[in-house]
Length: 288
Image 1 (cartoon, rainbow, N blue to C red):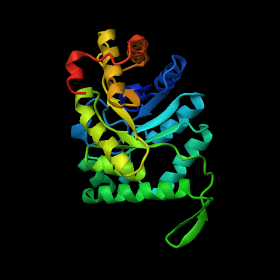
Image 2 (tube, helix red, strand yellow; image 1 turned 90 degrees about the horizontal axis):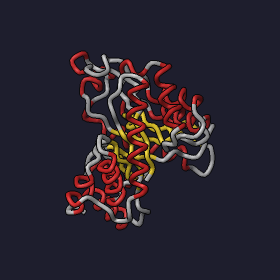
Image 3 (cartoon, one colour; image 1 turned 90 degrees about the vertical axis):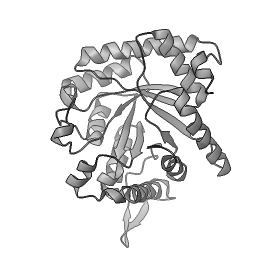
Image 4 (cartoon, helix red, strand yellow; image 1 turned 60 degrees about the vertical axis):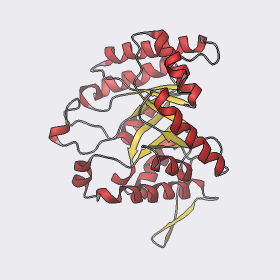
């Protein structure tokens, strides 16, 4: 299981100096991936923890690509109906090209109604718009050549690097069917193996029925690092139920806080590597 961390592109922790230091430290300690969130127009009554300050996720990842060399760069998640499909695909292709193929594209339909209102996007159309953008991304990246067409106008989609893996966020059943139709895996919120076991099993069943390879599962959530052994067992249990990538989220205000959180995450990762096969806490094994 690949282990990554969420870096804050919101609030005071999103200063250029802190953001760069966090990304470079995550890479230096050997984490596999870093992930960033997406908000465009936070309403004043919902600004706790960020003060309404959010960096654009794709722009931030483009900048972080130049500050790092190896670590994966992911969105968790990019809200597709906020953005027109073709310009968004161009930015995705640009980051993928300039980063050497390090982009991981977590996507979602969105949930915050005030943001949709500010953008002039009908909330009830978010699913349809998401599907249309995902269809376009697959069409641009997976075509046999660089030629594409929109609105009756042919054009060249270049650069056309390898398509980044697409992980569809959201809750079952819609997110599972969307992941199988357009994506390479599912990106659920939460890190409780007991709660994830059943939907992951259903995702695998649906994939097998459709003749698809077993999809990836990217779990995005917290980890109790106050007890490294318990955290290690949680990571091990997540892998046992089918999670292939884990993105650890935490709240920190500065680089020192991020560094402490990452050190604890690395300690849990190391301890998980020492656990014998099929070692799962009794409280979790009952759900497997």
